[in-house]
Length: 119
Image (cartoon, rainbow, N blue to C red; front, side):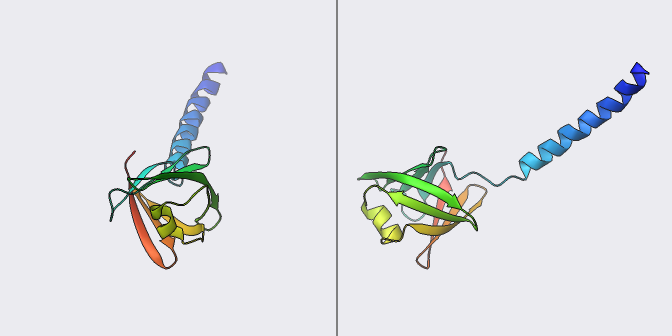
């Protein structure tokens, strides 16, 4: 009886492991990381896991927070504006985003900003 239970349990555990791995692989890519603007390599955005965001235009740095909303929207609360973040948002602090591999695309005021994940 014990041998039969073991023979049934091992395949069940294997199936649970495989299905768990496939679910993990299908999860949405994380926005957390350090992203560089593909058109101006001086511009960076860093998203932290704790909801903090840093904008760096190569001269000045500004900080704030971000929130991921439904429908792939980002909402920012920015502590101050530097040229990069002001150009990005022009007082509107929300935008649509999409992550594909190591590319982050932001749709802001009808403009598309493309960033590459650096780390």
